[in-house]
Amino acid sequence: RTLSILAQLLVKVQWWVGLPGKWLSQFTRLLAFAIILTPMFLPRMWAYIRSGDILKNVVYGPSIRHQLDIYRPLGLQDGQKAPVVIFFCGGAWIIGYKAWAFIMGQLFQKQGVLFVAPDYRNFPQVTVGGMVSDAATA
Image (cartoon, rainbow, N blue to C red; front, side, top):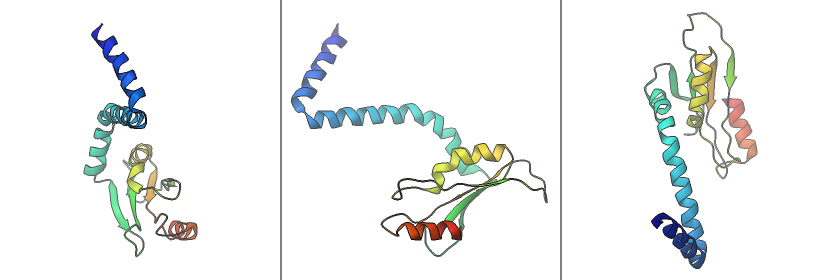
């Protein structure tokens, strides 16, 4: 009964408050989403940080964003060849970071694939031509 009254009150308050109430509602949903997903990401993130089979921040150019991560296949013998996947993490040309691919990199790594995740400059640092140049350089 109490929860029902509180829920009805919350709906009325949000209606009266308007936009700030909607913003608060969206923020609460985002926070709940992050709290629910955090336990799933923590073990993978810890493995990314601690792994000796991931070469992090390998420099390939003059910009601070010209770095890449290389996920070496697990169990690969010296001289043995492996398929290679190069993955550019996208974000509408304005966001994107190589570490966002860490779960994908670890999954490919376990399958015997050499996975490369380059970082590149985004807008407004450069235009699309600069991004393409960064990709070619990587």
